[in-house]
Amino acid sequence: MISENLYKELSVKNEKKIVLLVMDGIGDLPVGGKTPLESAKTPNLDKLVCKSNTGLTYPVSIGITPGSGPAHLSLFGYDPLRYNIGRGVLEALGIDFKMGNKDIATRANFATIDENGIITDRRAGRIPTEKNQEICEFLSSKITQIEDVEVIIRSGKEHRFVVIFRGNDLSDYVTDTDPQQEGLKPKKCKALDNKGKKTALIVNRFIEEVSSYLKDFSPVNYPLLRGISRYPDIPSMNDLFRLTPAAIATYPMYKGLARLVGMKILKTGNDISSEFETLKENWNAFDFFYVHIKKTDSYGEDGNFEKKVSVIEEVDKYIPFVLDLKPDCFVVTGDHSTPCKMKSHSWHPNPFLLYSTFGRKDPAISFSELECSKGILGNFEAVNSMALMLAHTLKLKKYGA
Image 1 (cartoon, rainbow, N blue to C red):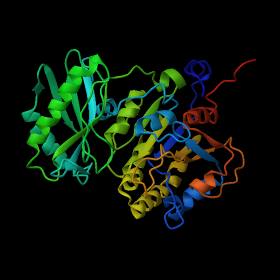
Image 2: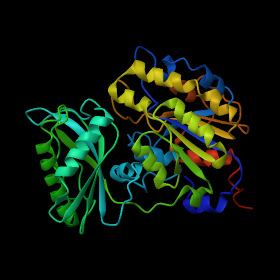
Image 3: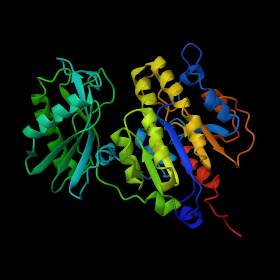
Image 4: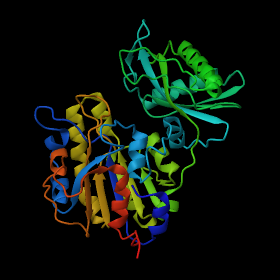
């Protein structure tokens, strides 16, 4: 990958515009002989492929199953091995929580466990956001401090919420409590070094207290915590790439990712059509747009093949809408694969499409995993996506004499 210093040396500001459309978890495996992309009717994406360059991307590296954080940071041009950002920080930033130097943030799920303490549903049936808000307000009235540590609870979307632990001598060198798999018992938070002992104690006390208060909120009866983390030191996209970037996303974590690297978070509705309307309304103000589609991933995690197909088909209807704006570079890809048969993230590479006036002829004829594997971009690490986008908009100077 290109070093940060080289990006700073080569990047130039111009008026050309980039759109990065990320269909979360878009990559998949065949069911009945076809993947969701191969099953979906996508005339507009297929037409665009015939004018684009294609390939497959590895979010981190071959064989590595990525979380959403490193997968997106790769697409934004950041080394995912150098910047291993905790999920808690991203969720906190996504709900516009201003973290301080005494804060430790954690992403949390409202979950369901049975009488034997076994996790039966990590997402408690994806409870409505309104129910989430009700529970968080109730817990906030009951749990405000554990020992000398302030506890701040904030609602997210559906089953997700955020917890901030604020106090002295806290550390993020602790383990998660979410095993990220059903059929297992939740884990205890453990310190990874002596500095983490206090934090592990506070986290475990918090879980005990929350569990005792959740008896009347079925199917919610247990919290799962992961991504316990501090705010990192990371350069902005403007510093590295001379971009004026904006993000259009509906879920807090992706807003948090975007805010972390200096994107302006644009207000949008909760449906796909409003996201594209937001793109049009703000077209003149920015030169890089990150548009995030969440439900392809959600339905992959639910194992709902048909619904994943339907989201892909809905997105396809808006491809001409984006092209009418005349972007100088338009990329369509996923952050990672979420195969329906696995109901989880996977290591499989993602289809990648790049449209610009500076592209070469490509053999792919449709937007799918198999067709993109034939493309002239080949298989490459997603962290190089930013270099391709900048190059195809003439935002990189020549290197060397």
